[in-house]
Length: 372
Image (tube, rainbow, N blue to C red; front, side, top):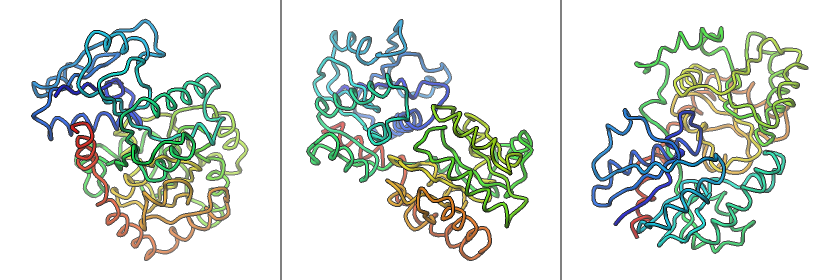
């Protein structure tokens, strides 16, 4: 069987959710499947260093396009008009216009429907249309949580039998506690931002309204009254809520102890995460929420919103707060900071919780669908 994959996300240099999802699945496919032939369609090539590790049954097909937008609907569509693979896998939900023999796609979340102010209007409309198109054309839809499956059924009236949940994984070799770190110079990375280990709260979130960062900033101001040496570190790309979030930081009495770092490289993210005192994730809406299990893998206690998929993913290894309440968030953070036994309990339960998740299992279930 020939399996074609839109591998463009994995080839990007700056990776976040969908990019890492595609990257890890490809590497697991290379380990787990030696019987099928793979064609990786990309808009920009993988590095030669990356391709040097590929087995012979994986080949790249670079499809250059004059425009950044609509690559699946234009350049990939043109390629499929010439030759279709037996199965086409789209790791995000932007399908080509031509109907391949069999299309499998992943819908990670549909936050753009309940939260209409996340993206610019044009992107909002694009996401709605591409997701609608995916629900109509895909043979099988993969999604990352039971919560998101129910959201797809609710908003797009999809038969639940067409949707398969494949929980995401985490990089267990990279996300280890600071005591086990051997390859990343954590001290140098922390020094870059004048941070001390275990002296800061950490969150990873682009500046979007659904990430609920103003609530975290208000909660931090409450917690600071009891923990005056504590700092807050926020890492993530600037998005539409940039002015609101940065304005909130500027208005804070404790603005000098709040650091917004922007987008950071993976090694920086790992170092900051595993040296944090606590990981806070107050999001209103998550399709999955990988940072929660990454923090648990690093032996860091987690306080997260009780909204959307987060209780499903965090399990008993997180303390949950009412999403819109800075007072409740502050109370939960203070409980963890002041109660050693609670902190150890969350860490222990977090380590038990992450046994449910792995890229190996995610890839195995995905291959089961692709190979049908």
